[in-house]
Amino acid sequence: MLIYAEEHSDEEVYRLLTPYVARWFRERYGRFTPPQRMAIPYIKAGHNILISSPTGTGKTLAAFLAIIDELVALDLNGGLDDKVYALYVSPLRALNNDMRRNLLVPLQGISEIVRRELGKELGIRVAVRTSDTTPYEKQRMLRNPPHILITTPESFAIALVAPRFRELLRGVRWIIVDEIHELASNKRGSHLALSIERLEELVEKPLQRIGLSATIAPLEEVARFLVGYRDDGTPRSCVIADARFSKPHDIRVLCPHFDLVYTPANVLNDAIYRILQELIARHRTTIVFTNTRSATERVVYKLRKVLKDNGVVDADSVEAHHSSLSRDVRLSVEEKLKRGELRVVVTSTSLELGIDIGYVDLVVLLSSPKSVTRLLQRVGRAGHHIEQVSKGRIIVVDRDDLVECTVLAKLAMERKIDRVKIPKKPLDVLAQHIVGMVLEKPRTVDEVLRIVRRSYPYHDLSGEELLSVVRFLAGEYGGLETYNVYSKIRFDEETGVIRRKRSARMIYQLNVGTIPDEAKVRVMLRGGG
Image (tube, rainbow, N blue to C red; front, side):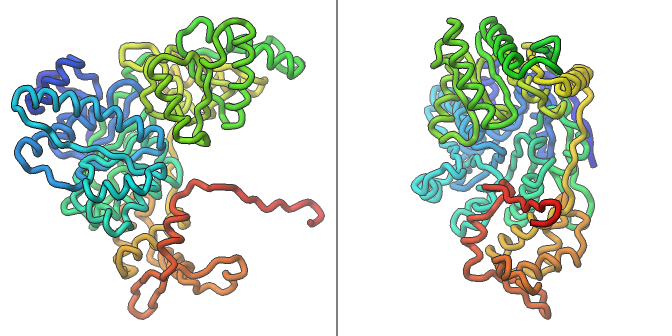
């Protein structure tokens, strides 16, 4: 059952919180934002919920404030155990590191109030577990588990089969999926949906699921993706907090030259950088979005030279940010941006999602973002507050781009959003999870089918489709060795039991996820060869 959330008053929400959490929020913010007034009462009541609102409207705090409130109450009553209570999953490592820093703010503020009034120290711990996490930090988590664990879909899948860490997940009560619009439309979302169902099988009582999304449609389908189905095939219930249009946008398309057809490329390129220079000079902090990492590096190199030669800003005030940069470089750029030390940051997609980047008053897009949702997400990085206007400018690069960007900008201002398309039954993702499930313990085919069918993408998976994947993984199809594909599990056709092979754990950990390290495409020429 899906229901839409009602917006409660500030005082109604305050009454639901413990006095210490309420006092911290009142002193720091005063008023709740629309998504917070919608979501917090339902989270406190134990409902699954999908919160959809633009960047800068406080939806992440809406999810965490209710959870922190519960953990504070447990801690004050002596009931806070050494286990993971809340699992936060996001698609970006940069977003995870940022989330940890942001969570420490309320935790430290509430702790100070509790210390001052009760003379007691709160012991709520937060940790990040991603591919950047060192083995030492992972060992420390085993000895002193975090109560809130921040991770990515891939690290989550690995944690499920880590024998000692898996036990710490048995007490998870809440799972928060951030930027769910970024995950639902591709195989990473399918991968995460199966991981959540495997966690559901592990935990002591049903998970409370919280999805956070920027502007997306249709909300009903994304909500079903978040919550999945019960064992009897009926959909789990979910509340939808729809605050997608609570923030104003100012979006315009800029054309660098009146003739985009016959103007030489070098003249057009110079005109683009002149527009960029003028926009940057008139604003305090600008984010420039490109569509590829290589374009990001080219634009940074050219912008530094242009801005320095024309005396606009120093070259050190222009930085690049993308996922191929080292962790230390990414974190350094994010910190400089928050402190207001940078005038320009050029990025591909790594700053597109909800990282807290401080004050940004302009977003520039070089060429089309290819979707209305992505356009609104990028422009939403400017005016990172619910009462500020999100200001975005799209600079077109050719005639076709002009038509596409104009249509996208018009649709965005009219709030006509792309409809998300959720992949159904990707069997390559299913293969990974079958290996992962038998690493935990031997499973029957019926047991695997029951767990898998609870997820939204695989609800219609047939028993025969599952068997075909199991037989493939067991190496029962001849000729696979020619392609260096070998069996990864043992399958007994008579009993229907699937077991692990000795080498399966290493294969699983090295290949988990759906983000390819490299792409190989076989090219066939006309006439052979």
